[in-house]
Figure 1 (cartoon, rainbow, N blue to C red):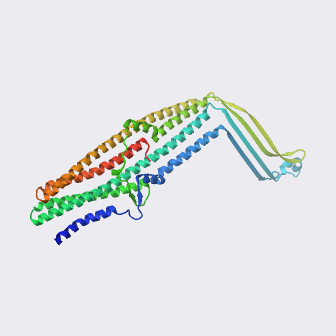
Figure 2: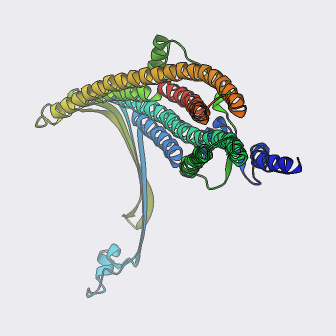
Figure 3: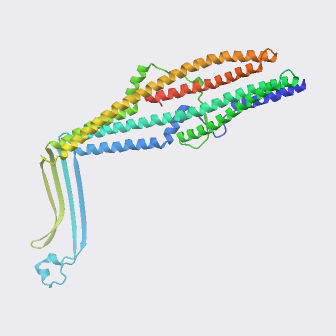
Length: 444
């Protein structure tokens, strides 16, 4: 009796260790991360996000530069200090005849301010401002697209790690059940009521499952490395989201298609580029028109007068007027510029149409994959419930000699495979949800 109790304690020891490992808190220093936390962390650290923010600032500068074309003011100043000797080799009388020749120094100051206010440029300035505004909208939309791409990358890496972790947990639990079956066959063999081949079969089942868990652990290490790269951090993390408990959202396909075309950042980028190229055509056509502008200029400088004595004074001058310029023929330079801008506009429209088709294809594929994963998980859950009943019945029958071991082993293999399939189906649903949200453009 005591020996049987000792064997039972030894048999339960791995199960106790497994439960202790599963219920233990995260390792000291490991950061607990939900999927939302991981995405927020990646947005803080990923280089692509910083580059997208820089592009937005550059677009702001281009918009400011375009607005400054409404008025052009330029102020230039110069000051020259000279030490000079102009009477080398000349007779002394030269200083009487021309005092400027004997000056030993010169102080020259000059300032020039020029103001030009375009009155009519063929709407080129207005088109330039509108184009710069559209380019800024494209930069902002590209920043959102970068956020979406980074979030999808993190989500895929996150669920890859969780898949491996959950498969490891399921494998460890199934391994413990198989070891108990192995010990049962060992006792039957020792008692002479079962052949040795039964123990060998149960032992091979345990070894094969250990090999499978070893392969899962190797994949877990690789998935963790990829998650670290996706987060762009180098510190231990503990993932908290369980795909088996996530709320599933699967709206109708026409609804998500409309949302994707309205909210997907890449579509916004393409449409903004089309608008910017349309304004570029308008700006190029402005060169066909005469250019009218108000111009003004102010000049100030010092000047030396020698009538009747040497006198230095500040001289001011100013002018204002209207400037009209027109180039009726420039060797088809304007015409070719307009044609190039028009072709670029047409190309942008074609690219936008192609992108919309790709977005719809991504939405439909993600929707179909998620729908299939939901249906598959429901079927797997039903199969697990039935298979567990079969395994329990066969285990009790085998213990009393009413069933063959091979029947129990096959049933146990089927149950373990269903347990693995349930994890795969649950993670597939979570990944498909992330892909669908990213295809729509609403992934956080």
